[in-house]
Image (spheres, rainbow, N blue to C red):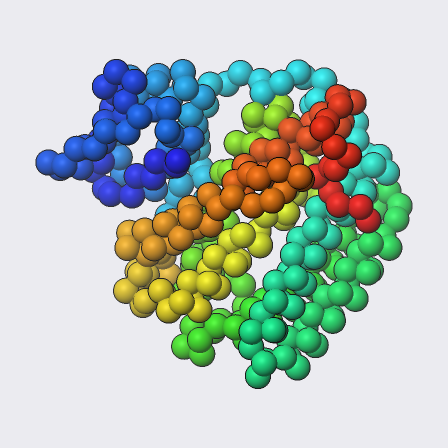
Length: 335
């Protein structure tokens, strides 16, 4: 489980092998054996004993800012695996294999978008024509992506151009699926201009933390990317890999609107937009947590949806250094 602290003034400390959570006069004990990570979204106090227990149990402590972006984490600091993985990661970034990996991640996201819209079309007959048009446009852009060849440094702009066009078309289609009162003009960030983007940005922030953790455990360098270029303190590989999993946030947030779970009082105004408040975070995190913990069939095994990220990252690392795996799949689907 993820231990999520959203109440201002929460105090977390250790009691034996348990985490003890205090909120005013209320207390709750949680076994450290049940905790995967500790997510802190607001003002909270942690004892050094609680931090030590988390480190001992390989539990990362993640701090999220007001829009859900992870801005820091407490981690044991030991390499997730051999440094040979990072050496190979650096080498591959400038090769044809690196290009195919980069394209595979982007195409995987595009395939998810196509599948999502095609499923939505079957449930909304009145939108069939409009969704078909949008989906066909994305399919054509997917074909263009798959045809890209050359040096990654030379074609990076081309890849991001196709991806951007597909994204704009996708969000236009998603907008059609929302109640009219919650439809949005365009994707917006920092801050979100509307309720949909506010929820989506927060869900993406949670995913960033999940992908970064998987990279660290697998021995991958979060800062060495393929599509996203290297910049100071930019977790480029996390930005690359999250493309494979963004659909989870998309489906969750659209589903909340479809189920009429989104209310105006879940948001607080900012100078130039909106922010998700405590009740809003509770609604999103409960549903998103349930979605991520669903057991699915993946690579010939039954596994929680969230754990497929870790599986993918380990398989990617093993593939890079030639370690055998239990089947022939890789993170990227065949192109």
